[in-house]
Image 1 (cartoon, rainbow, N blue to C red):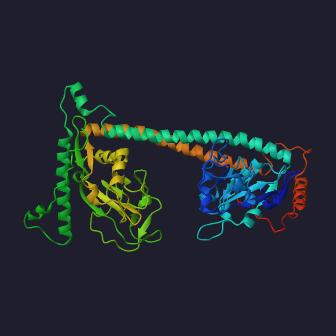
Image 2: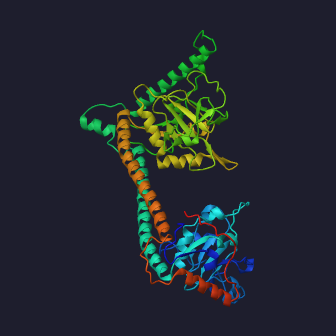
Image 3: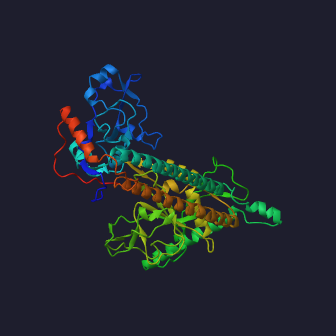
Length: 526
């Protein structure tokens, strides 16, 4: 809060101008009733908001009869009180809602009832909406708020007529911001749908004219995808043999004959019996056919301060790209053989994580990294058998991996254990991948690059606008409670008179002359 108060304003403790009512622990025989007269709200209901700036509670599914309500009259909450959770995680403690009728709350909720004709109820709502109540919670097994801590929060009390002007201005400004934010959310959702539809069209052969169609129009032949797959399989075997010879050389061995080549394992082909029909000239290939090797990463401990090789982790595989920031380094030598570090043409997949949304995320290494890098054990590396000048195959696989149907398949094949989702090389190797003729593959990747770069640029602009609306909302609320949002009228009754009236009314009804609890707590605005 501003140290210099606006004319006619006064700093008070929140408890001096509101009555804080705790909810009631309801017996089981009173829970879950319907068709009665007085609603009963729970913590979860505070997040169920409707129109009007998103601040009012919906009708509660739980109710009490009027007779039962009279037995709990001291906990009855009137219309226009602001409710918030008193126990739970930060996301629960920072939700607010305004009551629209007489009601009750369960014992995990506080209701702040403003002093009548002295504090505008919606101004109280706006104030509590921008106070980070989670920062006042006590450190227990489940964070919780104490009544006295909330009552001690410092509150800038304005003249009552100015309060009404502030609320009118806040309703106007914030309702427009609410509408802008809803519009941005719709744009974001539309961008996600568009991106998914473009990727789906690409992997189904509907994004660009097929190579077969163009060849017919131009009166020429073309190389169908099965021929491309044969070239990949030859490259796969060549890469494997090259790696085997390197291993033997590292051990000082020289093969006397070609018997060692018999150890080569033919890749698993996809089961195409239940797969959809592909466009003319396409074929199905398995991940195992496209990769000549696969392996898990290292389990050696890593640290940001260590001086070993950089080791990529889950945060470094984001948005289908490698993010070489926030790196950690091996704390000891990894003992890698030549060529075992991360290389161009490698495909990294997140194989284990507690989040379903992260499992199976992948990134293609489309260029050589500066210096040697390795990867952690919760990633799998598939080394793609990409023939020379055909790096677009890796690009194609990366786009296929992002397609919505692929995402569904990956999540379905993930095994669960001890709260973790897990993918294995065995489960992913037979995954069927549609393979177009190479020239068509290049055109599709180019088209996707163009379309999705526009999507990304638009999404970045939307995020920037969302950040601006959040910042503007915070500024508007800050100005409101610093007396800078609306004009002031020297003829307004000063807030000190309001406070005198509140104290007098409380004295009459036996609630004391206000709080004298020591220094007020500065509100933590968010």
